[in-house]
Image (cartoon, rainbow, N blue to C red; front, side):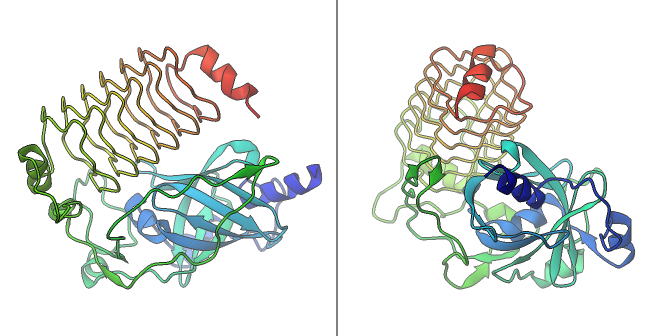
Length: 365
């Protein structure tokens, strides 16, 4: 078993041996490969299944990148695992963490498109893996004109260009937590993810419009304001059900979301500073780079939530449920974490994590 684990690490870790046929970063660029930005990476992998091959072709794996940031994987050796994925907007990288591969560490790669395949490069410029998406990724003419596979210019603050993406499910529901047995998942799904026909994603100024409006129920004034403008600072949204909603970058500073159902909600980069999220359900929520400074998350359910690079300074997290939560590079300086449940949570490179929680997660098998 130990030898198998060492072999599996080749899929995601840097190999120390050289190889004459191994492509390096400079060679790929010279041959015309184009680097993807973080937004482009997300377009390619989110909701897709990638057939990934290690640089020396010794190991292959099929990896499903779910839209809620989860990973399911099966490799050619017959081993299954699961984990998390995210993108690094600052470094334009794809980051992956697997439960049983790579010692549970988070590994980040620069992604380049080379004709009909994609290349993953380590930070030292060596090739780590190549992959081909199971579902073809289409770009609009606007993307082509703007050079979709080129990085945005330094200091650019342009909004993300609309891309072709698979249709969203009209009534999203929370997937059942996979059963675990003997330390490995007993059931995993692999291969091409199901989905309807592709359609063009709304522009940045329409990102949340009518995506979560329940036709059978009249919206409250605050809810309607959120739908129409994408912001509702200080609003009373207590007990609201926003399951599966896309709320990237919204302004909910100081809003009352106590007892709200925010399961699988995409709140990437959202302003939740000082918000009341007491007893809110945030299972599988995407809170990457969200500003939660001074927010009240006491008794909140953050099971499987992605809080990577989130600002949680001085947040009240008393009795919060953080089982399997992902807090990669999160800032927890001054946060009240009394009574937090955090088994199997990831605090890699996080700031301000109490020592007892770090030790607790190290001891958890």
